[in-house]
Image (cartoon, rainbow, N blue to C red; front, side, top):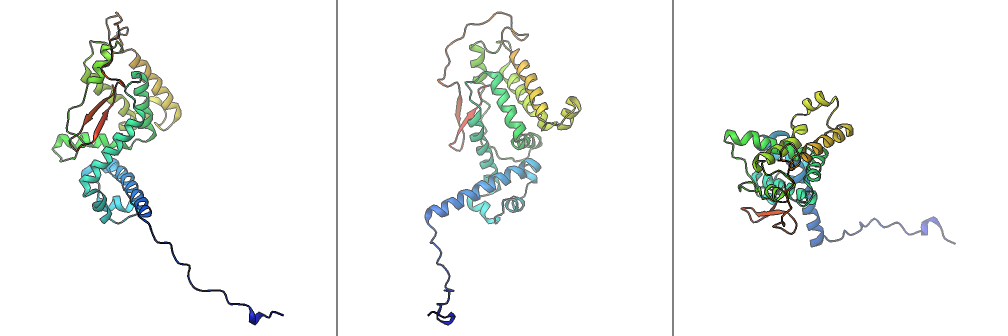
Length: 250
């Protein structure tokens, strides 16, 4: 007959913890880098490169400030890493072989879904003319061969200046993010409203569609399409730090 006194006492010895493997440490490092990149994008987009503080970025990411230097070397290194992360994100949705109307619509969708990269671009544009030493992923001139290819293929009128067109399309995509108050006054709703997105996208598609030879920008004479100089229509350029930068085919 078993009595209460004969019941073995429960062990109080702690369960040994599994030793961390190299894979575990790599996963933690990747998570830390991802958290820092997202926090940095948030801070840089809100305050610009000069105004953002490493301490605030680390606090937002929930890590020690020392880990910024460990993973990225410096604030400048983190800023460049944010730019390179955007280029990878851009390459995931901006296929240069798409029709220009669809490509512009994709840029707009990305800008409205997450306006932080466009706000960061605006900060960079506002600070650089004043001589601020803002790091850049690449100092190379913008590649306009995508616009010229579209002109050769008859999608865009030959009479349009490629640089002017590229800047105009960038401004059209950025306008709701940079001027949300004006967008609300014009459209009667905020830029986060799906109705705004749908209406503005329709307007952009109409405008871009009239940039061809048959539209007001052309001479009314359709051009015969010429063979593309690239299998995909993309323009990948080598940046100064060895990364390949995918330029949108606009």
